[in-house]
Length: 121
Image 1 (cartoon, rainbow, N blue to C red):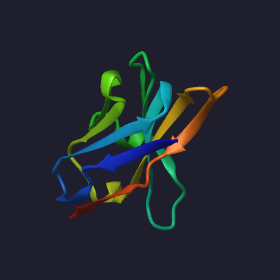
Image 2 (cartoon, one colour):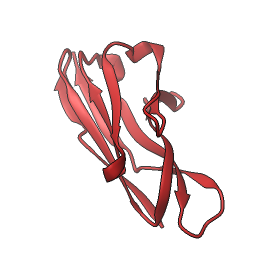
Image 3 (spheres, rainbow, N blue to C red):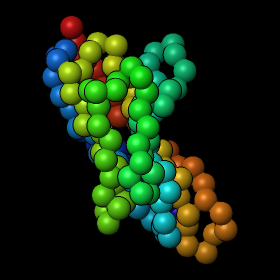
């Protein structure tokens, strides 16, 4: 089995910062891309940022220059540093990872349970 456990969400004032963490655990052989998605009330889930196993990154236009994604491959952990937060960043943030498991053919998407980020104006 594989688990993704997120932490670091909370309530912050506009202009503030938060750092999200997501640790993957279980029968993991390797992790390909890891990323963060978010879903605001009444909206579809959207990609925020993604990072490959080699460190290549991709960001949504709405957060470029404010958020930074990084990962620690030794810890199977991905981070999202969020600066200059805006009320429109308010959403549930989900961690995602493309994981190859021991003794299992192929790789599969796994999701965390989500962590709430609320930015007050």
